[in-house]
Length: 435
Image (cartoon, rainbow, N blue to C red; front, side):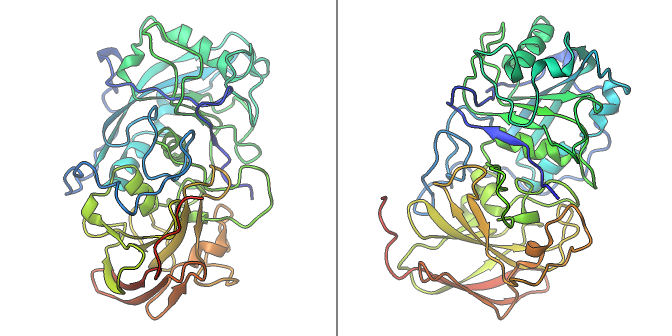
């Protein structure tokens, strides 16, 4: 099965990057009564204190694109506080919508907003502002040249630039783009091939792509959503694509290579099909969803010490232990248990993975360490899950040893409240300097 193959194209490249630093919906575009559905119970967690993503465990690396660098470059959408998403709907002369825009909107919201709220422990309040009418494009879909890998080339009369230019022209008189942080463009579900055949959904994030609105702001941080994804919680294509606008990379291979997945179903930036899955703790820290005191920074040369990790599924407590192994790489440990965003998790335990901030999106910038290699996993019957890594967690009594750095991590035990106690032997020597 081909995993989700939506992509964020590089900011700063001639044919790449899209995103807007925008803010709040004008009154005509507020969510209509009833469209948002029932509100879930409040998560009892206050806002994260500022900072916390700096210091000896912060990683440097890719700075001109989405990536695993601890600090996200300027130009991307904020991932904390109230984030407002202008949400538009398009169809084509050869693919007129057969459902109402309200029905299409309900395929994604409020579920995607609720997902962000829960995953961020209430620190991201996502407000989708829909313009509930179909914007009829003037040309057949094929005339825009929209296919897998289509670019946003301001010098071209086809591709996403031509499509976006027509969209902006259609709404510029009634929409103030300065009021929004990002843009969702949702196509009629019958426009383009089924997602099971070719996934077209794509995000252009970060840089100025050469298209400006009448409000004087660039059209950027824009996600184009096509077809329908199969399986439960298919709305997560929004969470995957919008996370590119927040600065997260693709964790699956985008170059077509036939290789085992590097992360699998442990983060929606790899697999966002099938049963729900939560964001990794490193991504929550990068996005500002974890406070400084929820990250144990284990510096090279420090003594062997024990750490208690609270599962990602529950608010509060220490979420990740970060062990830098160079200026660009680190090992991360977090506790994963079954919860609202991980309902199908089959092996609770400590997940260990390597972050490489100098590796580009789509080239495995993050790799999960498999505690049970060759086991086949525990989701062998689910076509939307790469099963091998589904049981990758380390259980009490097991040890992960990183031969390159000498780091050792042992899971000592678990408590009735779901916390896991680990012992970390960090690298004995300081991290090597930048190459």
